[in-house]
Structures are given as C-alpha cells and as structure tokens.
View 1 (tube, rainbow, N blue to C red):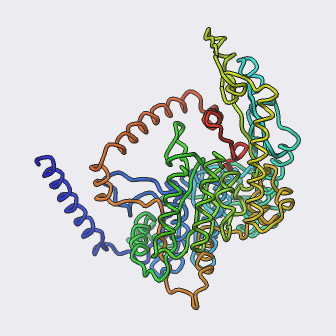
View 2: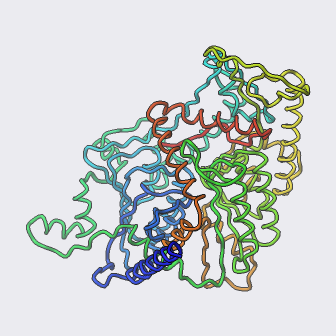
View 3: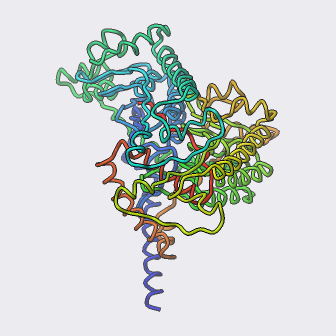
Length: 602
C-alpha cells in the first residue's frame, strides 16, 4: 500500500507540474514579438521524431525538417515577421531535405520579405541552400567553397584475402552493387555507369539551383563551382556573396536597419527590434498546429533508418532502424482510427530486411484500401525503402531523393580462416547436405549457391511484380528500370517510379485531394507518429515496467561502444554496420533489399 501511495503521490506531483507548465505556456505578456526578424538554423533539425527526456516539454523538442518548412511558410504570411536570417551553423540534414527547406525559403522570398543568409563557411549544401535567400553574407575570415561532388568507395577484397575472410554473396540485378566492396578491388562497369548518372543528376541540380537563386547563367554558376574562390574577399569580388560582416554587424543591420545602424554608430540609441529565435516561434506554432480545427486529419508516420524484423530502435552504431512490428502497429492504428481521414508515410530508408519489407508492404496495402495513402520520400527511399512505398496511391519525392534500387542480394562472410590465424579452430557435425548453408564457418558449395540464388531470384520476381502492380506497369516495363539501379527522384519521375516532385507539404496536400471532398477543407490537422509525449505520459510509462529501463540501459552501453568506435575506426563504421547487418540477415535466412552504400552531399 505504501508503494502504491508513493506512486500516487508522484503522479499527483507530476500532474501538478504538468498543469503549471500548461499555465506558463501561454504568451509572455512582457514579450513584444511583433516587428522582429526570425532567426533560423538547421543545426538541430532531424527528419524523424526523437524522444525527449522526462522533463522535456514536447513543444521544446528539436525541430523536424518538415516542421521547419511549415514554419517558414507560416512566417511568410505572418505580419509580425518582417524578414528572416538563415544562419549556417552546421547540420546533418541530407540533400533531399535541404531541397525541401530550400523550396520553403523560395516561397518566403517570393512573399516579398527579405531573407539574409549568414555564415562562416559555405560548402555545397550551405551555398545551395543560401542561394534561396535574396542576400548572402559571410564572415570576413570565412570560406566559400561550393566545389562540386566526389564519392569515394572503399573496397575490402584484398584485405579479406590477407585476413582469410571469404565473402559468399549472390545478387539479382546487374546494378545491385552493394556486395562489390566485399568481393572486388574496384567498381564494376554497371556500378560505374549508375554512380556516374547519379552524380550527374545531383550536380546538375546543384548548378541549376545556384544559378536560379543568384540570378546568373548556368555557365556562371558552373564556373563558380569548377573554380571556387575559398576566401570571403574573392567570393565578394566574384559576386558569389553580397556582403562581408561580423555577427554583430548583421544583428545591427536587421534589428536597426542600415540607416539606424549608422545612427547607432554615432552614439544615438535607436529602437531595436531583437531577432526572434525560431525555436521560440516554433513553440508558438506547435501550439497553434496542435489546437487547429480538425475538419480533416492526416496522419504522418515517420519511417527512418534500415528496415529490420521486430521493433524500431537504434543500433550499435547510432543508426535508426524501422522495425516491421512497430511500423505495422502504427499503420493498423491509423487504419482503425475513425478520426484519421488520410495517411502519409514519410520514408527515409536505404532498405534492409527483405522479409520485414514485405510484411510492411502488406500493411500498407491494407491501409491504402481503407484510406487515401501517400508516400513522402526524404533523402533515401531505396530498395526496401521503395518496397514499403510502392503500393501507395501516390509517391512524392524530392529531385535529390535516392530511390529505386529494385533488386536483392544476400549471403555471408566466412570467418573460419581468420579465426584459424588467431589459433581458433572449428569442427562441425551435421545431418543434412544443406545444414551449413547459412553458417558463417563454411563457404557455399555449388549446390548451396544454386539453392540460395533460386531464393534470391524468387524474391526479385516478387519485388518487381508487386512494384509493377503498384505503379500500373507491366513486369517487363518495371524490370527495365529495376535490376538494382538507383535513381534520383528527378530520374525516377521520368521513369514512372514516382508521381510528383516535392516534400511533405505536397504529400499532405495530395492526401487531402484524394479524399475528393466537395469543397477544400478550412483546416487540416496533422497527427505525427511516433508521437512526442508529454512529461506525464512518459512518467506513466516509466512506472509501468522495466522494459524501457532495460532498453535505456542497453542504449547507454551501445552509446559508449559507439564513442569508442568513432574514435578508433571512424572510416570503418559504415562498413562494419553493413557487415553486421548482413550477417544478422544471413543467419535468419533473410535477404537484403538495401542501397549499395550511401551518398552524402557536403
């Protein structure tokens, strides 16, 4: 009874704290928020919701990039926001998400309000994003270096030979090159062709965006990239930036205006309209979005990371995963919720388990048959990521989204030789000729390889058949653009693999359109899953059992190992992550529907 009373007291106190937070969450009567420029940064942005701590207010949690795009468009229509400063402070946001934010900035600029970008260093992503603003400023000692794209792939075949590690892989699709780093010392002709086409597409997007934003010819924009200035002074001389300024000079410019800033320099004290940080503005907008009229409700489900069997989580290397069990439950929930009118699945995944992808595909079909279902593709929606997207009513992708990769591979690494070099020997007893098919201590023999390949070919046929059905194409038409080939969103649109170029806002608009309402709804409420929970909700979960504590304990241990790996083997981390995932899939007899490596635009 004492224990129950203690819980009751904690819950009572938590409720009191929650009420206090709600009471304090309104407008600050002392804060004049009119006439203040908005200060925007992508430093803390991510594409999928992250859980907060017990004392975190959901309104204060780090922003989603999709929230920032909506925030920017709201600010364009807000009479209290006269302009915006875009601060380049570093970000892990991917290329397609940068394009999504950039489109929103172009809308802000089109509203007639000024947008100024300021930073100390501009690389490809930063300069491309900044070009959406009407003015670009850089610190006097800063760097401007949009210097084009380079992709480097590490190959391990010779190292494996020296270590006596034997790769045993098969793939279906000439362009399914994910296993090449383990088997070759360089790329195949197919891999080179596909990668070159990808880089050409993204490079052209970079050039075109800079030319459009800066109001110069495509030739001029390309010349800037081919012969970048680096120094701030040279960038100014060549017209790539508009002003050199320190941070305090920028603040004076936007808070006082150029004329008043000059007056202030003479000793006068003009009225200053301080910058309003976007996190403060976002907090207000989140409240408004949450309490908006719900004439129409659209559920947005975020699917971030590699696709695995089981529950979503984070692996040893800090990468998010999409657990088929978790995502299937979320799809079932929105399908059965009568308040949800339409569904948008936000996919940011390079793929993963073929079996888990197929299980999710089935739930997508069931949900699509019940309600309008649209997919919004972020940086990646390839292989398994495309698999879970292809049954939707409509697919929206950014020009720089990496998608397609409709193919499959699988196999194992045999470590017995490497273990032997360490003085470890193994002996296997078996019953059944194929008993060691999935063993990491034995190579495939001819019969093993033939059996495994038949399995892969069967899965590939299923993949292509379902994709063809979803895209309303014949098998041969789909196969011609499949075979493991990766496309940008721009290329995928040309080949019928997606329906529209755009971001989450366009996907939500399409979901509403598919409802075929007699008139456009006055308001659309967006419900995001997984939800960001309140203090009281998280506290109740903590009190209900030890599972979450066990998960958190494991996460802390994984984080410690992750720090060690980052410090000692930073370059090997992606390969180790993929190798471990392949071994896990192989031990289960699963196939890999995954992107061949990763491409990061810096």
